Amino acid sequence: MIGSTGNGDEIVIDLNDNCKIKVLDHEDNFSEEFANSSIVKFAKGLILYQDFIDLILIENGEDALIDSKFSDNQINYLKQKMIDNDQDSMNSDCFWSQEIEILILNRDENK
Image 1 (cartoon, rainbow, N blue to C red):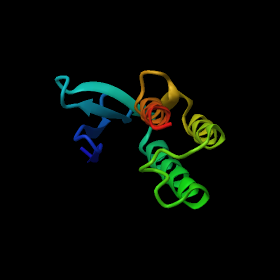
Image 2 (cartoon, helix red, strand yellow; image 1 turned 90 degrees about the vertical axis):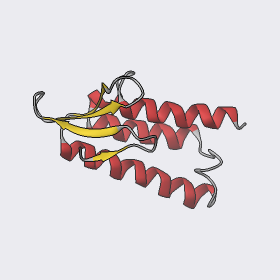
Image 3 (tube, helix red, strand yellow; image 1 turned 90 degrees about the horizontal axis):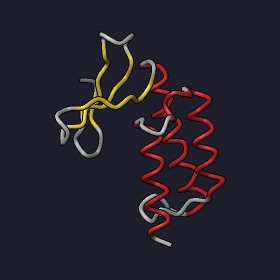
Image 4 (cartoon, rainbow, N blue to C red; image 1 turned 30 degrees about the horizontal axis):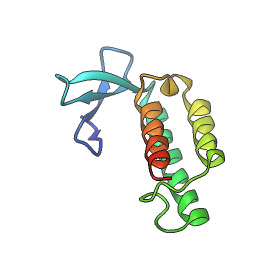
């Protein structure tokens, strides 16, 4: 295990699958969810996500993340950067694409 998500799912390196980074869902018998093709791409994904947070805090105010205040352009920029980093990480059933969809759903519910 190299880490965990905010809801307690384990983040692991799958040594039996070309060292891909996966998230193990602790509420679903530790089912696997693809995150990134390598540790380097996962680290870059974390940096891109933090850069997005920093950007919306600067441009939209200090409560932008908590209040889900970001534009379509800002979230689309993050999506494109994630695709450029590791295209497979943005498939619909993968960790990063789901994290971004949660951000969008939270924003749309708060409108």
